[in-house]
Length: 498
Ligand code: 0RQ
Image 1 (cartoon, helix red, strand yellow):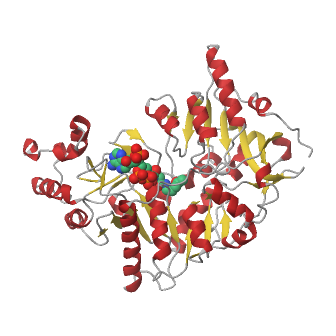
Image 2 (cartoon, protein in one colour):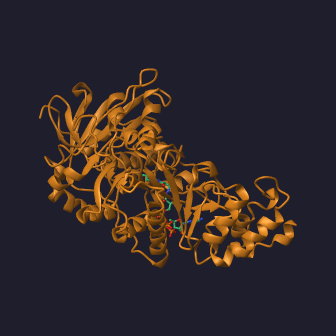
Image 3 (cartoon, helix red, strand yellow):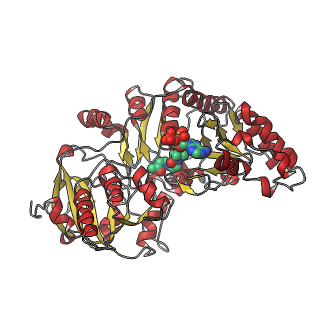
């Protein structure tokens, strides 16, 4: 190989205070793992000497403990976009030690190319193979790597020995032209390939290669409990009923599924929903459950940005890579999440809410309206353009102290205009064609937990003179203020607001 082999510490030397950096990957897979550890150590050393050191980072989505985690603990992150999910970074964001702007994932690459975020000083790109002319096979998470490789002035390669020679043929790397010259993105079937299996990196920009030798999968999911099983069963019940009545074509439509325990439970529900024919996924993350569905023949094909699987499952995928190359394509996030393609293919989106209000607005990101949880991720890309958009969540959280159905969401990520179906462990609310008051009844009766139904109905009664969307503004966030003061939303007393 013509590129110099660097130690992580030598590579970290290139990083300077306030540098703008692009990292490959999407969730833990494909994200840098070793240079970031050395950058964190450098930050700690400089901080101990009283010197400032923080870098600004754009990625595809969340990363891993050896990236966002270790850098956040070292207080080495200045600005971060477009998505994160690490508890230590979450703390830094909520205390303003790190600045985070939360962005629709499909938009990050194009906004970078449009110059909205300035130049990229440095990039770290994980690859499974690289040739002397810069032709690379990237890792198992693609993210924004084509744009980052184009925009960065200097590039460090992390060559992952564990993936060496395994992944060629899994990716479809494609960069759209930018306005005013953008044409169609010619994906007409989930499995269409429109780009290249390799990424062409300008070899002049590659300053060196750092070796790595391990996967960094996601942690295994919390085992399914009664609540998540019920949510999964209700989503499947909705899909089956919709299929029976002809709302979904008999051949079915591609599915998207978000991150987290709830999404994983929904996917496991699909294994047993035999009335749903074998289906395809046009999605951004393929989790452990989808790999099982592929082995069972339930999922025929998956277009994704990342194999967001646990280490054991990644081992299994790599050992059977020829099977998975026939069933999976890995795309950049601006293509996996592309609104044009999602709408053309008729994708059914399934994402998770922290809370939903009685009119169908969704909060996916902010606990009690102020504390950032993870970010909007790709949920907006899919929801706004879906054939049918579904949100699910438990009806109650924290032993019933929190109702996930509230009078007014404390932060809005997805408005009532984009949300078709809400599902909880209690049931299904179909909001299509309903006005705000009809929606409120549908959601309270079918999705709210019985311990909160009366309180929510009483809120509606309190608000009957409140216009087309009947709110009592000074009471609308009482569930949240009550939780913050007494620790239990059930203590709300509407007589105080009458
Ligand atoms: O807290 O961790 O202390 O137990 O939130 O909740 O029920 O385990 O749900 O893991 O599916 O995550 C919305 C965060 C759900 C996720 C969210 C507490 C609850 C628990 C987690 P604990 P669950 P999940 C594709 C699409 C946005 C991004 C997205 C998410 C913790 O799905 O980040 O969709 N989505 N991307 O107790 C206070 C409430 C709460 C609450 C739950 N109302 N108030 N706490 N919790 N509801 C993927 C990508 O874009 C990469």
